[in-house]
Length: 177
Image (tube, rainbow, N blue to C red; front, side, top):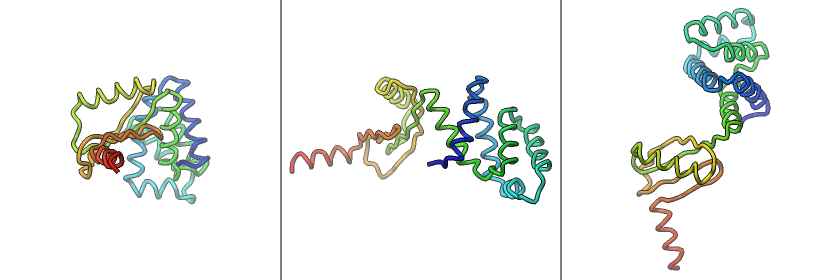
């Protein structure tokens, strides 16, 4: 769950991205910078340090943007976070941005757990079926869970579809007793 501040910033960036029709570019740029930021403790320390002037931090972002490349929307957004001393909330803001953007685009995110890695045809069929069931576009993340005997467990939003062998055995046991 993201904080109110993170949601405020995430919503603002999502609105800019949608207004300019650059939601996928902004999503990719923010994700790319987010990975760089999370993996580089020195960068985090410099950008979060209140003693270092904003102009120096801005120059660092500008240099990263030139190497990246990093689009103007995300670059300006990062300047705003630095100016308001909110850069430490970047990962939380990124999650809020994703959620808000998906909500505005009518996309449901979900997770699929299976005992084996699903083939591409199975994934496509599963996504198609869920999209027809929910009447929305569905983006799924797939995870292998060796603890499952067989079948799949799907969570889309707050709804869970449990078609695992374990669940079916529990249902049989419940009916018998």
